[in-house]
Image 1 (tube, rainbow, N blue to C red):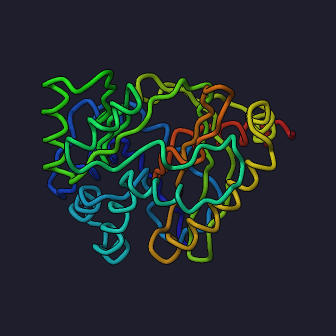
Image 2: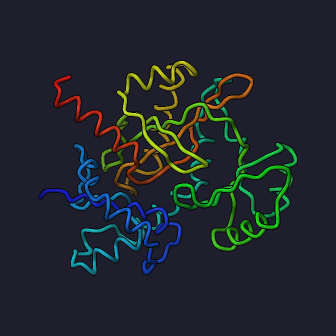
Amino acid sequence: MSEQIYIFNPEHDLCIANGDENFVPPRSAVGFAKENTDLSGHLKRPNKQRRQIIPWGWNHALKKRLINEGVDPITLPSEEELQFIRAHSRREFALDVDSRLSLGDSRVIGPDYRIVATCIDEIEAFITANGSAVLKSPLSGSGKGIRFVREGLSESDEGWYRRTLDKQGSVIVERRFEIIKECAMLFECHHEGLDFIGYSLFESRNGAYSRNILASNEDIEDILGGYISLKTLTSVREGLIAILADTLVGHYEGFLGVDQMICQMASPVFIPVSEINLRMTMGLIARNQYDLAHIRQGN
């Protein structure tokens, strides 16, 4: 195969949420991509993908852009593949995967802390039962499509919910937790199976990505091991590999990240599937930077 070309298109989440091949991302998103084109170099890692073009994420708008630039359509994802990626980028997919994990650890929070709401009564009942909630659109960019609600819905909240329901068909409603640590497990899906790449340890503010912590996989395991057993982490990793491989192999080829959280309740608890991103992530960049730096140092 000829040299693979990596494309940094961080506007991907906005494009996939919109779904229209003619969608024009905001100038801020496009500008960020242009200002950080050097990040494309940090996306590269040994991989088993067969495609020559490897973007941050595949969507209809990117495919049309590449065709307009003269790329042969046969080398790009098919309509069926793009539809699959969009459908499995929805937050409902994370709920489905979470519900299929069987861990038997009381410190692991199951999928019941969130619901898929299709009417306002379901949201109001959830808030009444839990006191506060986080509302999330099924598809959104980092920090977008998220609202924090306390003690009932405001008029603005109701308007947002109705617009989201009209465009995307549902709203994810979650309990609001005090977050101690945010992490992710990183994978690559290819035609032969699904491989675990490593861990990501990161921080966010109000649902928007803030920064990654550069650390070895072993150090991140030690940090997480202060809250949850390594046996449980291993069980989560193995369970995710089995479930995701069963769902994705043959339909999706690329990198993905499963976001996770350590949260404070009476004692620390672990949420094994918070989000699933069928694309590259900032965590993958951090993993690559750390690993490459230590390879150069001979460690």
